[in-house]
Length: 409
Ligand SMILES: [Zn+2]
Image 1: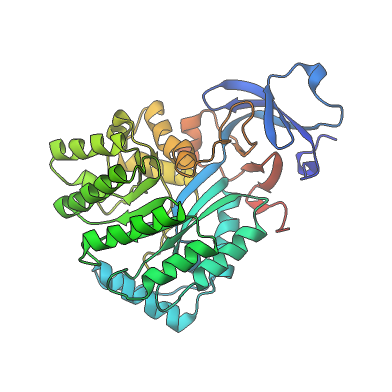
Image 2: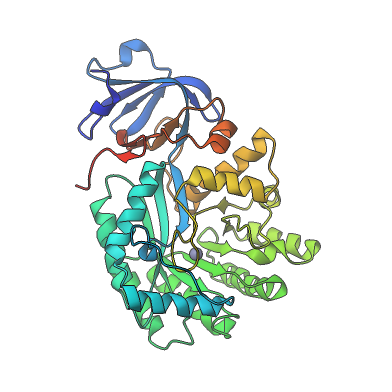
């Protein structure tokens, strides 16, 4: 054999030769039974029937991790819908519900479109927030559970039950969140406890209560600015500490860390590190953002994601987590190679840590979830974002040069 398109799910061994492996250098590697079984293996140990992939010096990364998106409501492939939403956050929430009513968004179909696009870009792990409210009920959760099932051989996915329209201000939402978690949602979502619900203590007590009862982690959208956001963050830190939930809480966006007085922000960062609370930042160009290098300095886990892609909130996004690493770099003034790689770390290892993917990475024994692309160096891959990527999931090629290699099983 030898042609890499012959790598299929039935293939037991793959020998990838001559690739620039991140944090290891130029190497060969052997994949067996869906895992990385050796680097620079003794030729005698390579099975005769192994498929050989000639990397020709390309860069090899672990699969990219899309740790924050909203696949249930992307408008990808639904034509162009002019965005005329008002300036306030609540305007966008109302606008979204209106659009959903007017054009009808099928979460199953739409999530499949986004997922396929993202897989071709090299993502192998996903955490998607899915709207749960008194208008759409559990339709989004049902749609995402179906998409996850259809593509489970190509990726790993966590589903967050997300109260996008508020919790306390929409009676019935709590019961729906509870039902979503029973149905198979993996994570409890939350949203701006002060700004949307205007009842931070009650909102957080309900969210953390659900988390405790279902034994599932928490991921809270916190857009609140400056001192208001910092106040909510303190309440989240307090609950994480009191309930012993270290390592099970993520705060998404956390814009307040880029806004408050620096000594106060650093105090918050030390508390976040102590309680092992992760931060998700997508490097919003329009808002102050958590400083990634400072978060790393404190030892905070940082992950990233596309957030909404081509939806009623905004017209941008293409699901490319290499591009996201570049945006993080631009937003954080990363110029040196090691700084650019810090942004990439958030788009790979950071997300995998938040998703507790213990078999993730580029070590012997890790799942062979990989993305290979032509580039001279790791930072070069981030700035170049080559279109010609080869994506492996558990040792099988699932996408090549922007095309899914194998349909859903
Ligand atoms: Zn979001």
